[in-house]
Every structure is written in C-alpha cells, then in structure tokens.
Length: 147
Image (cartoon, rainbow, N blue to C red; front, side, top):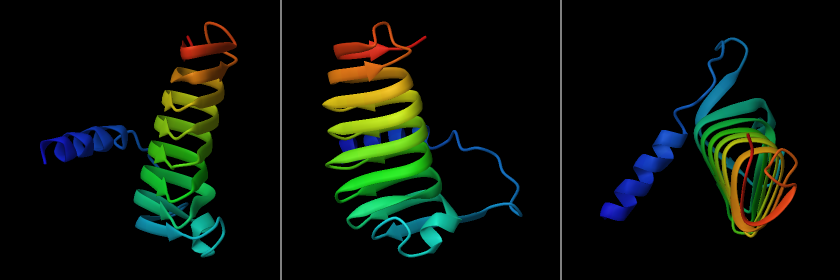
C-alpha cells in the first residue's frame, strides 16, 4: 500500500505543471477513454486534465495534463505529466515522464525511460539506446542528457 501511495504522489507531482489556458479557447475533461486516435471524435477536440486511457491506443491532436496510459501504445501532441504504454509512446512535446519500451518525442523537459529513446531535445534519457541530438553525444547507451 505504501508503494502505491508513493507512486501516486510522484505521478501527481509530474502532473502539476499544466499550462494555463483560457477556458473559452479549450474544452477540458477530467477523464477520457480512446479506442484509436479520433474514436470517439472528442478525443481530438477535448483536452484532458486528469487521466486518459487508451483501449488499445491512446492519442489525439490535443493536450493531456496528467496521466496517459494505453493497453498498447500512446501518441498525443502534448503531454504534461506521465505517458506510458507497453509497446511505445510518441509525443511532440512532453513535460514529465515518458515510459515504455520505445519512446519518441520532439522535445522532452523531463525523463524518457525505456529500451530505445529518441528525441531531438531531451533533458534526461535512461535506456539501452538513447538518441538525443542535444545530448552529450547524439547516441549513447544507458544514459544521455541534454543541456
């Protein structure tokens, strides 16, 4: 029980860096279920400020501020918090943690944790092979970080 509580606190910490937005410009939901990107159609129109679950794939052209988990894979334009799946995760901009066997992003302000991590600009990567154009080396094993 203690471990579950600690993991929940860490996940909540990562989700606190949500962007401020005008409520008239964006529609936010606390919970969203996606079957494939675009199904249901609200998955592209509504931003999530809480939890998004993909059965089997989570994704959309919007923002998740919280936790995104999928049974297979995730791809969302912008994530503030945690993005995780058993196959792969893809994001354009991620602030927080991206954890899956294969992680891909344009910009990560946080950590990518997986077997293969690919990013143009990442703060920290931990995995078997790490590709980071702004890292100490463009390709490393075990760990890579950018400045």
